[in-house]
Image (cartoon, rainbow, N blue to C red; front, side, top):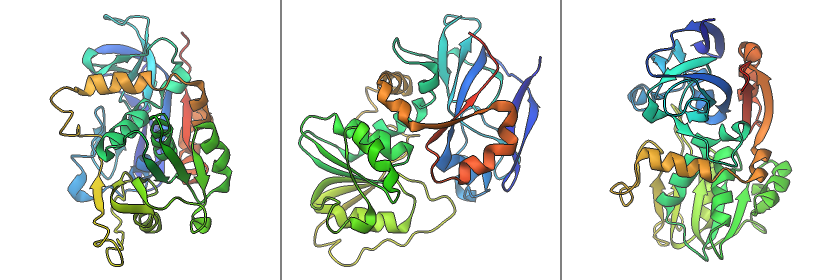
Length: 322
């Protein structure tokens, strides 16, 4: 049977097309994950013209805006090579089977299920965000936005000894998720009384101007605010008046495509991905999988999944059997 893949073919339109498997090690896909923030921007054609090359996924086909085959959260079974018969993670779009260079396949560590391993790219991003922010033991940390990236970043931050971590999200229903991940919780409307102030580190992950304003407001003197969300073609006003300068705040960008300079001499992309997968072995992280769809149904459901603000990581199931 020939491989099949999901393509975004026009604004808010997707279809399944036959796919060329390419070169490298053959992998039969078990699951892929929808990374809602970035994939929604791609699906709606909101990748800026200046970023079309930097935003290319490792196994992407086509060019922005359309048609394009995009995605980077795949888990499957290697059918040959050194990892034959093992479950592996790959930065590959939604496709029934594919081939990739052996160096681009990361075996799943013991204790990590294929169903949860689709969070690998998201955990890699969360790890990079904490590195960029310089989180340290004892820090008071606020994470603005409890989507997958914000939640995983909060989860990691809460496991640094002595930290006090609060997830802030407009959806009160995320309070239970925050507790499960070891974090406190606050709603922006109640921020005056509940969201922490004088934070040592604030991470913004909502891709909204309101969220960024709140992030700056939560930061303490000489603190760091990490902008972890990507705004696509949109522009966001940044409140640099008020106390921004007198508090000497640092506004830092974070992007997983580049290793933080202080770690680049020692950390390869492969080492970082292997560590991200190890960090996913905790079963509590299954709470970040908010739904599941069969691949054959994906063209009809993709837009609704991306548009639903309740979506965390949506899992796509394939027919492959171990």
